[in-house]
Image 1 (cartoon, protein in one colour):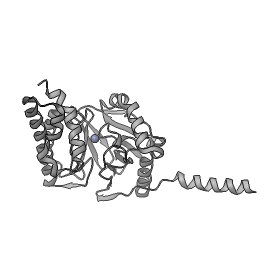
Image 2 (cartoon, helix red, strand yellow):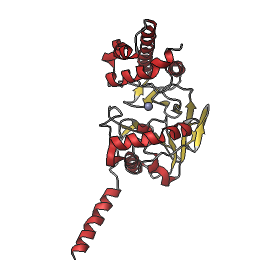
Image 3 (cartoon, rainbow, N blue to C red):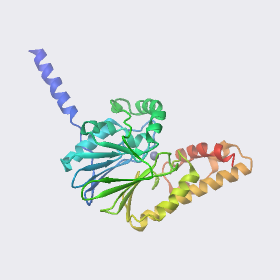
Image 4 (cartoon, protein in one colour):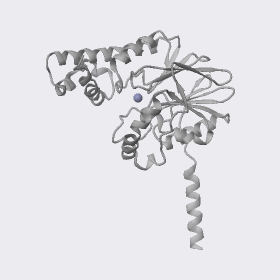
Amino acid sequence: MLLRILFGFVFTLTCCLVKAEPLTVEALGNDIYVHHGVHEDLSENYHGDICNISFIVGSKGIAVIDTGGSLKVGQQLHEAIRKVSPLPILYVINTHVHPDHIFGNAAFKQDNPAFVGHEKLPDAMERRRESYLRTNQQWQGEAFAGSEIIKPSVLVKGTLKLDLGDRTLVLTAYPTAHTNTDVTVFDDKSSTLWTGDLLFVDRTPSIDGDIKGWLAVINELKIHEAQNAIPGHSGLLKESNWKQQLNNEERYLWTLLNDIRASIKKGEVMEKSMATAAASERRYWQLFDIVNRRNVNNIYPSLEWE
Ligand SMILES: [Zn+2]
């Protein structure tokens, strides 16, 4: 009897745990939905939910843009999608390789979508597999259970069009900038551009690719026709505001580049440069002290050989 009660209790508990709590999403109109993560660094207190996660509903099916930092977040996203539409999930797009954007992919395996990413994404995922799994496990603990690397099955080289029925998504792959795997997604119906982390707003831009390459990509984005933009983190940017935010990002990157170059010219060691480069930008950006130091650490060695 006691065993039966116990079994019943465990059964109820597992039942309730299986169904994930849906992510809160903002309906932007035009059948576009976005979940906004919180501003947190990728380190000790990170809980896998810091980036923008979006889905677009077309007449034939749904496209997901980025899936969050764990299977759990991906499952919550799945629940949120099912509250909105029963249509098939046709595409799961990753804007780049960073772990806060890709680890929810596994929650969509059973939907059998095309996983879509930059032509260099499979290789980048493979190279980072071990360290990403280890560090994310460390940071997130139990909440990271079941998370895995799911590589793209459809690769973006140049541009690629995805058909959702009444709307077309145009994906563009870029040379190395924020990372070596950056893609943007443009939805013609709403004239909205998903920039991934090619555009940072509020949060200090973090460089894991090539600062000069990134500045070149910013010049391309500046002439993009999109009326609205959804960055990798933070809210929707309307009309001229998104170009203004691009200018802010460009200003930070140029300041950082020039300050490090000046520092090298003066013969300062990297430690010194880490403390002083781009200091004039500090008041404009969140997480500045951590991210800016890391940026100097990444860029300084390559600029020494200019
Ligand atoms: Zn990123």
